[in-house]
Image (cartoon, rainbow, N blue to C red; front, top):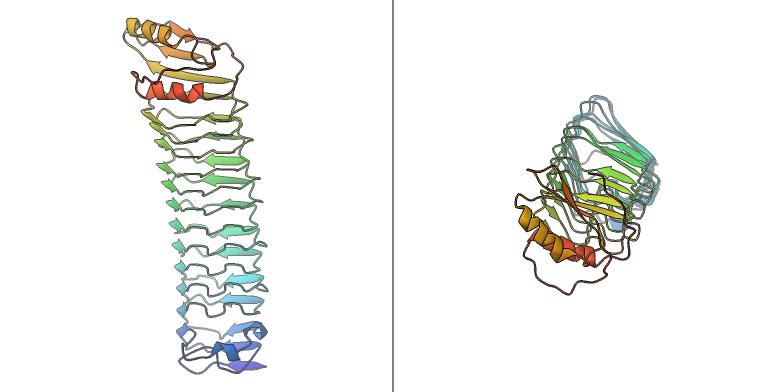
Length: 381
């Protein structure tokens, strides 16, 4: 049965139908509170047709939620798709935006739990709301039109989806919390230099994510908590603009072997590398704060290089004597006035001293003392 919508209140009546034709004169389609949806078998709705030259501007909240539609072509005049408009549309495989689309906002949960397999986002879209494509397990391909204006990818947007690869537009400034959480099929991603914030758990539990590439001259400032926790990354070079490695950022990254920490890093948070697979790490002299258990359970870690500048040679010698037989790691003190380096090597298991006369360096040593047994290697000057 086909029904043409003429009323101004709602696109649905209490009469079941499998096809809806929406007139070109309609600017908003919504569900009126007065309509008793319990009398509408929305699962029977399979086809939505917009008349040619439609002036529709808004597809409102929950309009087609849970319906049986299989395909939809959204008119170019639409500027906003409301919350959960197509959520739980399990049969919806194809979404097409008419050429020269004016769409600006894809709101929260719009396609959550739908059956879409591929989608091309119009360049006019500036915001993709929270959980917009979450739990879209069949969604493998996301394409953004060239010259995209997208700025914000909201929380949980692609959480649990089936995407394998995505090219984030160069206009994006924020990747919010849990955006790609549990995207098990995601294998690689390039972060454009425009991104300044990667939110908490953004790539957590992406078990097949091996490659993270940051575009040169990255402006990234914040990498949130748990961002890569439990991911499959093997190597990463953190941009020079980043100042903090937050709590549990690389927690349980068992395949992570190499990481390059820039000299801009001032803070390393709680359990930042706990249970990771890193084999070697160099701590820059820019570090001013480090939390507890940073290297706990890093069983593959064989070498830590700590570089700090010491102008007072007597102080360096005194520190060397203090640390003898207390750590299982090689430490280099680079003396700016002299070309030589002091290398400390020892294998004693524990330190009973709680003194911290050397600030962040002392706390770093306590982290090292908590680690397991490591193989000592020579360090080249």
